[in-house]
Length: 425
Ligand SMILES: Cc1ncc(COP(=O)(O)O)c(C=O)c1O
Image 1 (tube, rainbow, N blue to C red):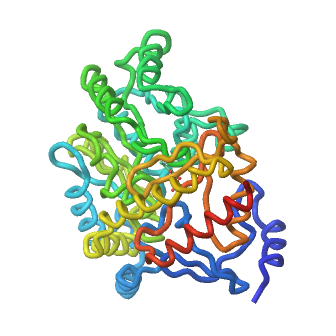
Image 2: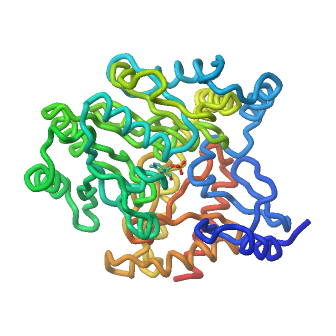
Image 3: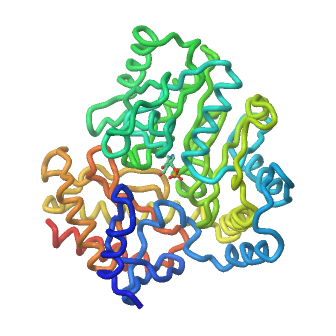
């Protein structure tokens, strides 16, 4: 068996530098919320492969569904010869997604692809090119997704030019001085100075920003966007690649709002670890592009669809939505206790359900502390806890632990987090 150090050396020699890794430890195996590296060291996984393991690593029901599908067909390409798991998953997603009226689904492989396709569909349905997205938003690494992403380094710098007809408004974040009124003023300013509303196909918004720092879109913003969209014939695309699939205590974070999106993107935890993504939306919008306009060779792979059907069953059978709520509450409670000690430098604690995070700030201020954040994630890994940072200011610690984590393992992870905070204070 290779050591972490030897593998890292090989990796540095063989793999492009642009692919970053949060740790230089190599995974050997994983189960639910625990991971073991190639040297046998155990970690508690608060990262979940960046939000992909909401139902845990290698859930037995999901593995069994994958294995059963492997025995039948691994790939035929839906454009060549369709298969039932694709249709069955579309039916389930159409019933689950908070879309007004009848819904239809398109399956894909990655989050970026889902975003690209949602924009294609919105453009075709409206006959308009423009998209308004938000600062701090992250939508993927393909060209259009990069254009839509609202953070320059490391995602956009040096990779342009990007597709045109993309604009950004500030995403509200009162802790750092941006209100809903500021966001709406930005949109009004865009309509006055840059682009007329009838050139805009869609608003693209994450109900809870993922990479941006787990900032929650206030309900009044979502209502105001819906009103603007209805007034000007614009569609709303909710990017739920990270906020979806039980993370916030609902299948989709949009269920927390009293207005609907027209299109929702989904990926990450839907496939139980296999690459799978989708766009679910109002049937007449989804049906706008003609046959052949949408798809992809691997899009909606049968094994991934079988896994997704099992993931949905697990979410129902194991009451994962309620569990997400409980995990989020316990996390807030524990971090709230730790925040009482000013030396810990814990700023805002925020999120929805189990999509929770906290900022590290210089004690007594709202000033972000990215250096401490880096030190904390590094120390946590040494102690056996995989932690992810995020945020526009790279000072936010987010929790994407499998929602199916056992109580004891979760508490152990929280204790390691407290220790890492103390040791890096
Ligand atoms: C909200 C959001 N949209 C899109 C993406 C891109 O997904 P993928 O990396 O699968 O292309 C991500 C990935 O983190 C995301 O969080």
